Amino acid sequence: MQRTNGWAQRKIRFPVELDALVLRTDGSRVAVRLSNFSDQGCRVESDGDFHVGEKLKIAMPRMGSVRAQVRWCEPGSFGTRFLTETV
Image (cartoon, rainbow, N blue to C red):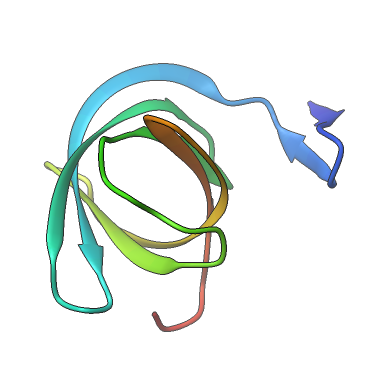
């Protein structure tokens, strides 16, 4: 199922409560919590300072890592789109 979010169509995301680790290109690591998830992206809850366009990896227990790009930011959270390219 698709819906329009103002930028493009995206699949509906499902609520989750999953602790994860963001690995940034500068080598730093930030503990985060995923609050929704689809096969195209996720919402990340974090007190960290992230920027639109930033590329990173999200490491999830028992699920491995995914490459992602920050698509939007607001205080306390940001949204990502999963990538197939190298970070």
